[in-house]
Length: 212
Image 1 (cartoon, one colour):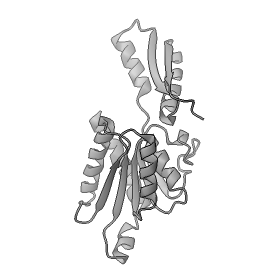
Image 2 (spheres, helix red, strand yellow):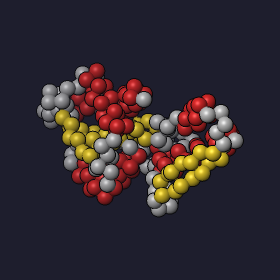
Image 3 (cartoon, rainbow, N blue to C red):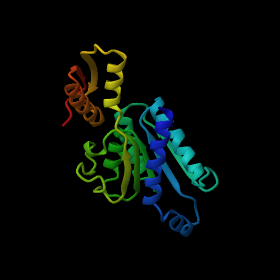
Image 4 (tube, rainbow, N blue to C red):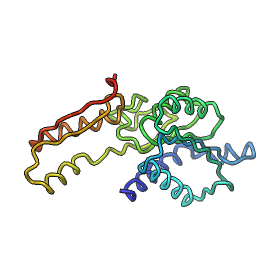
């Protein structure tokens, strides 16, 4: 799983490099190094692995912190209010690039950076199209010009098929999902379709407020 997320982040960082290909010209003009702000939603393994992949990709791209790159790390520790406050600080901080890991971090920074004054690259997001940030579901290339990234939906179908393989008599599966998070809603929709196709009864326990 760690290798999977490292690969995902490598891809999303590549998107960022393409998006900000004029970094060197802009930073050279003002005699500095690129300043990056990164928002991680919480101290969880999936985001920690993403951060490890990010650092690895930067190193492979020739970027070294303290030499030709400056990164300010932020962590909301799972609190949405804190995330929104940090996002505002990032959007107004004069950074060359904003990076986010998680759907909630993507939404917070996208909302604070609506005017597109700073390029924004996102990753570790289940489905960018349902996040409400302007990414088209029909055409992923249709997105705000200052924003790029990649969706990395969880392997829901593979999980169900593995469960059936381990337990051929599987008839019911219980799942808890958060109605207040777009990524959770996107995932449960996939789970509903897969379970129906496989003849498995999906027993849902919904938490959080309804997603609008």
